[in-house]
Length: 337
Ligand SMILES: *Cc1c(COP(=O)(O)O)cnc(C)c1O
Image (tube, rainbow, N blue to C red; front, side, top):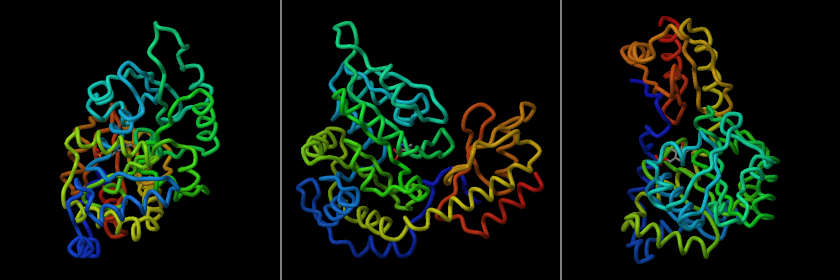
């Protein structure tokens, strides 16, 4: 089976497993796991942020960030396609009691003007706008990358208006490898950043939340409340350290292969069109006459897995376990489907 459903399906490499086996560990709830501390500090300093917090999932880092930035009754501005709205089980409401203002915009992105228009005036009738969230790359947008100037403009609005600015950077390293900006540039404009280690970076588990020391202190308390305090988590953190050291540079390979997969998909008669391919995600829209489930089943019977991604829409994701040989097999399956 060649599994292109997600970049979360990767298994740790031998090098990563060796790093995990030889990790130095302690009880992280007591703040005594040296490898967790190393990972948190390494990521924070990479982005020029004061502190980091290692969490079990990207959902948890996003949800902690929202809770740390808001009070019940506040409002969060985000895009209609955002993961933290669509794919986190309604967590904004459940965990933070906050309301959500959804913005439209091209493949998950919006401008500072839309943010300004959607900030509520200070009046008892309205929820208090408190937080703006963006996602880079945007998953539902087909892995598209934000223009950094646009993010800086939104950051300026949030600063002027006393709002907080959070980045769901589950795939931020994919965006960075297609941009001129550095992690430090990103660290300088956001109040908090969430990063996934278990997607393109290939770790089995784990995400990081980066922010100021004061906010991470509060985030640590929220993580405990959510049941996310982990003990000898250094075995997992070691995979994260290894991923940051060995798997960031290779993300571009996934992007090159995604474009090659796109060329093969464009030639498939059942495919109407593709979203533009910018990173490791390939989204195909099927012709109206094609049965989506039957098409995915035909692919799967031939050893290639993709996921449904909305009406007539399917997603393929390139990752660490897909090399040129696997891609060759996928292309020949697509040629004959
Ligand atoms: C995967 C993902 C997350 C977090 O997912 P988990 O499965 O909880 O780690 C958050 N945001 C985006 C954009 C994602 O793709």
